[in-house]
Image (cartoon, rainbow, N blue to C red; front, side, top):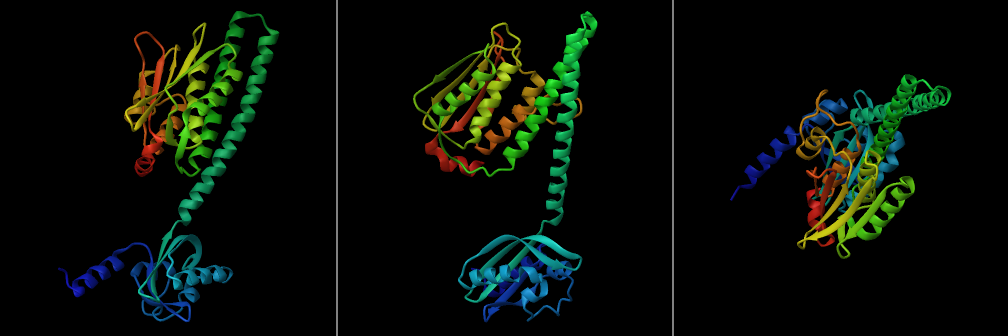
Length: 349
């Protein structure tokens, strides 16, 4: 059995080795007083190691506009409750944002841990602005290109010019679809992934109804085995809609057909499959999605729909398989946990 001296030595080593600023404090009259600070705290907040000891923590690093917030954290600590929040604190280089975690222990003592996320948040904001500007400009420019290609088709009978105009219009439509897929991915992946039981049949009915109104010439069937429930969330509708849209939109058959099926496999798994009679998904795109093959300038998919499907299914703790039968067409299979396996699905996501 380890001695208390050995345990204290291990703890002190861990305390000092942490790259995040950490202080050990004591609540005196409800206010945190610094009893020990690691080197990272001294470096980040710009104090000499000895000057912070026995000083009020809030006076050292909390901006005046955030004092009330800090006092609320202190009240929770005094009540024996932990704290976790994104906060602003004064550092040697000015105010920065941190993930703050407060951990109470031994009556009036506790630890405060600060993880600097200022740069990460700034990058996220810059990328968000970049994405919005690019999508806006792309959408506007594509509207002009589509309009001009339509005008050309209306005003010329020259076969070569009409063929070129058709290609311009088709390519512009594909780029517009890609832009919308990127917008959907940014929105969907930014949401939380809380899981719950989802009834498959009504969800499939909604997806089929939506696609049927957009693709009136397509034949869409459903085959639901029983009344399966899966562990997922509302994003499953986006998954099925994306697969069904892809199955019909890129279908070059004279009679485009697609089927959504749901089959119970044992007691823990439901297989959702979307089958079509189209040209099939190129092998390289299948490998990238199902085998995590490396993406390179010469080795990448042409769209984002399958990526969206994969990322959401991965978050559910499920998996995806793609098959191209010799008879033609494509079958995309999703294997999801049943609702009764919800806790296991959450743990694997």
